[in-house]
Length: 314
Image 1: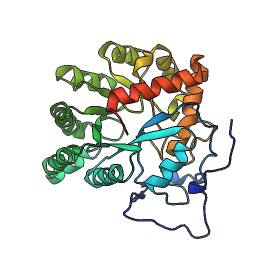
Image 2: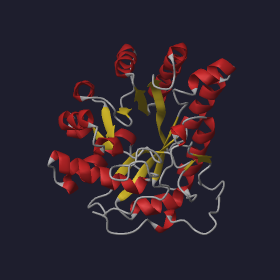
Image 3: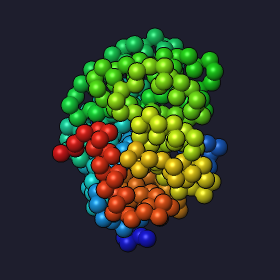
């Protein structure tokens, strides 16, 4: 149920102002494939959750919609509806630097830094991957950086010629996370078997998170057996996501997290519109309804699981 209009931070003004440096958006979302038009206004604010939860994965450096919103304003809108904390995630050196700046400015944020799987073959081809990985490790030493990610394998956008370099980068990130005792945030797209194979062939860090969990019930059972967290995004609300809901049904409650992956993957019925951390409240309410679980109980579980994965925010 919606109880208010779009949060004021996300309402268009006559002349949108591009805020800069201080924790603001620095990249724009790419146009839809095929030139399809999108509805660029944000969803209305959801009914507040009864207990604060964490948005396990967001990209506050991405500009989307019709306005530029600072990280602080984004978290103000989220906190107002019970999404009190978030993990800001880097996908390259630039966005990982942004992440360090953002967590310095706002105590409601923790950070994750990495080279995205689709970026790794490009950097390797240019001969700059090792330098990028060295900087990621340096940035990861910041006390409010609590995860290495997103890293993993993506067979949707990277063809077979880039997969060896993707796997090399994945293993290097895994090693950094293990040595620094940080969580590992997995990006897994069309690569479930190989992601699991890499994790099983190495000594993974103590805390592994499947960001934007995209597997079925079988992968959920593998995660249960290994104590790997599963972070459910707005995709679990999509009408064609039966397999995800079956995974949610069998997931160990102590391993369930939630996220937006904002500005992407906005939950139903706002699919295709810009996403933001405040909208994770729609996903959590859907999950509780689907599971037949008390909403406050699920919020408390997600809160506790998030702190086990990343430590304390305050």
